[in-house]
Length: 411
Ligand code: GLY
Ligand code: MN
Ligand code: MN
Image (tube, rainbow, N blue to C red; front, side):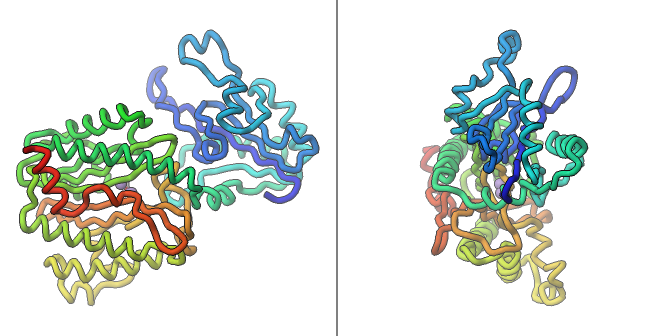
């Protein structure tokens, strides 16, 4: 932060659905990263140059109300919040305004947060944007700065502690995948697989799924965000399963594609092996120094070659393609990697070189509508100084490992 600056963070809204119902509360990711507090109506104020040291870091919480707690459960007491956040000054929301006004008058600059995720597309005016409007109206002569640009830098490189929590989310997800392979049978419905995943996550103390689990059998696998999960898993089909646990606020993001009956057909194995080749190739490139943009170009070139070998593209398809419309795009129409952390599609640079400490996915796919099948293989990778560590290296991934596990567990 620049000298004599105050930064103010607000929590997410509690979002209404219908009637008096609310969607489950999801904390603002930056506020969570800074405080660890998952409670509605929380605020954080940072003012490193405040003359009074006790106001350099202040957590603002809703005052616990006994009657409300009888309906909605306990809210944090000041001592509990201090333990969670490490912030020693806690004040109540109903008493914060006069204090905040005085602090703002001492500051030259005001940092406010907004959602600068490069995949964001919603136009809904969330609380942080309303707060920006209100604050600018009330304090028109201050200089305003973007907290998101700072948080983007901080959150992109994970600490060892963060990687430990991601590993826990991955461990829960890995055990869940083994259970799903064991119980997979032709005739099962996709939602039954989803139910197994949900049961496994919650019974291992995950918060829940990191995102809507994708259980896409047969041609459903060609729909990238297929979450209807309402079809029968048929003998002879593959099922693409993209799911991950959220644990301690951090996410795992796994995709495996397995044969519903436990055995890949010859063609399925050919396509699967091609996808695994691309996965391993991509992983070998994902190291500090490369940009996601360059990485995609290189993986794309390999995909053009691989897709010719399995009869999807011809030489002339590739020759006649352009960088804007590469040939492989017909069968692989999404990015290969994204940052992973508190958000499944986490903050992090695309155009600048990747750095040690970043965690990303590797997830090539091959989607063949005309053959009613799709394959994706996704692992989570931690970049180290000299290369990377595959945080999912112990999860069965080759066609042989998957077939052997499914056979053994059904014997
Ligand atoms: N499950 C979302 C993704 O893989 O990006
Ligand atoms: Mn995924
Ligand atoms: Mn992913």
